Image (cartoon, rainbow, N blue to C red; front, side, top):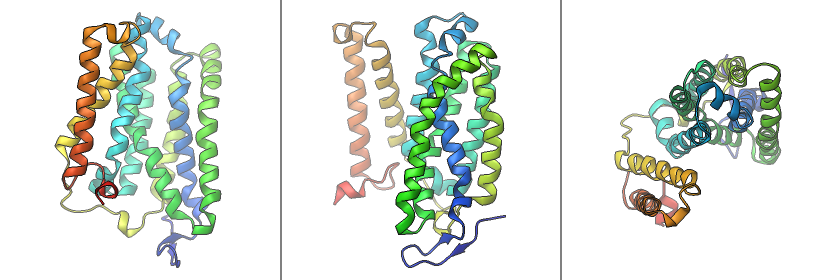
Length: 275
């Protein structure tokens, strides 16, 4: 069943029961944020299983962050292309499937690839969740709603390392990913049935991707992450390739923001800065 709507002076469309409509959001956000830290304590165990060095195993964490960072600014585009509710459900499903694949990985290459998929799925969860939470409640109740939402975002990364350590010691490290599967499936099913889906958030026609902005965003974030990950081992700016990489990252970052400000139909809406 879908969440029904009623009229409101401040918001034309509101679900009759916003807490019921937003229940899958709180679950999905919790497992996504927790997954950002749950793998930290299991990293040495994963590196040992894959016969990988410490530097190689770090990519298990950073690939997840890079992928999420690329998707987050692209949420508006994908929401228009697929419809906000559809994109949210797809994001939760992709995150869940990638979590299962992470648990089945047999090499460092597979793990990094699956973590990229996991980050891509999770990248759309938090920004969409915040938007849906804000639009699901009347103005006078939004503060309470966002406080509860923020509580989950704060608690999840604290629980992550403790839960990850307990699971790794008592079971095996793949279970830190397998536990996401039933929770993710529940969140996806409930999102499909209950999620607030107003008419203005439906799929739009003639949506075009900003190829230049998307390319610059990928190059900027990937090079910046490599700079931070490898800079210390290379003695930072004493290494020529670090200086070149940092320069390249700055150019791509500047190019991305300029492209978003100066052009129309961009990946990120910079209309506030244009005025």
